[in-house]
Structure formats: structure tokens, C-alpha cells
Amino acid sequence: MSGPAVAADPEAAYYQTVEEFFVSRRGDPLFLSNADWLLVRGWRVAGIPLRVVLRGIADALDGHAHSWSRDRKVGSLSYCASEVEAAVERWQRALAFGGDDGVSATSCLSRFAELLEAAAPSCGRAGEDARGLAAALRARALRGEEAVAGLEPWLKEREAGLLAALRAEPPPPALLALEEAIESDLRPYLGRMPARVVAQVRADALARRVLEAFGLPRLSLFHL
Image 1 (tube, helix red, strand yellow):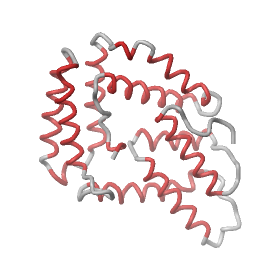
Image 2 (tube, helix red, strand yellow):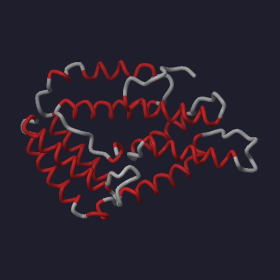
Image 3 (cartoon, rainbow, N blue to C red):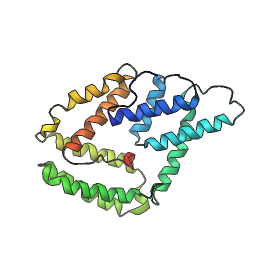
Image 4 (tube, rainbow, N blue to C red):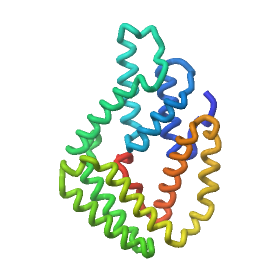
């Protein structure tokens, strides 16, 4: 298949890895369609970790290999959507009790709060936003199992607010060539992915790099 063997940008790597895994498992060098790319975008926007998506794709294709229709090629990534949803449900249930690697959503919230408090002094006026968000994260963590419900959208909203506050600050030197670096990383994908997918990768890359420049994590269960 065309394109780089390894994506330079972590956000682009999510999409590329899904494509390569699906194509290799189905045994046919058929590229993803625009609809398939948008399906992957939906998974990424929802904050579904890569390993969970790959688990669902593997389950779907394993099931197909043992079905009556196994002699027919799977024509679209959408064939795997229901198994990915099932894998997501299992992952979300596990988060309430320690996750499949022993990490719970509540411990992750506490860790986010620690990182925000540690970085707050270097965030200028946005430091107050960081401290306030840390307090909100700790309060949410105290809810235990109830904290998991609707957590990813809640985190996404608060991250957006923090990013807005950070962008009002003078940018650290590392951010001066930020957009140019992102565009360089994305160049190999411009002709392969729909515009909406490229825009999402660009937005995710920018958010990650802005937060990293201030010593802050992305606020998402995606990284669990």
C-alpha cells in the first residue's frame, strides 16, 4: 500500500494503523473508502483507544473466517462496526473496576489533576483555569463508578476550555513553528483521507502540541 510505513504524527498513526490492520487481516490490498475513513474518525473523536478498535476488528474478521460466508471478502470496514461497539462496551465496563490493564477511570482523573496542578505555575493566567479543572477532576473521581458515565465528552469539553485559555497566553518558543510542523507531518495523507479526517487529525495534533508545550496532558480516556 502507498504512504509511509510509520506515521510521523501520533494522531495520523491511529488512522494508518487501523487501515493497515484491517487490510492485512482481510487479505486483500484494498484501500479504505471515504466512508471507512469517516468511520475511523468517529471512533477517534469518541476517544476509543486504538487497541480497543483493533480488538473489535479482529473479533469481526475472526467471526467471518468461521462463518458460512467466509469465502466472500469483507468489502468495508463497516462490517466490523458492531464488534468494535461490543469491544467498546467491554472496555467501558472494565474502566469502572480497574480497566483491562489495571488502570481505572478514577485513577486516571486523579493523575490528570496532579499533572494540571504541577504545570499550573508555568501556564500564566491560564494557571488558575488549570487549578480549577484539577479540583473538578478530583471531585469527579470521588464519584467512583458513576464517574465513568459520559466521562469522555465531559473531559473533551473541559480540555477545550483549557486550550482556549492557554492560547490567550504568549506561546512558548517551541510553539512558534507548530503549524508548519503539523502540515509537514500531514502532507503524505492529504490525498488519501477525506478533508474532514485530515481536519480532525490537524486539530488533534495542534491540541496535543499546545498542551505538551505547557507540560499538560491531553484529557481523554483515549490514552488509557
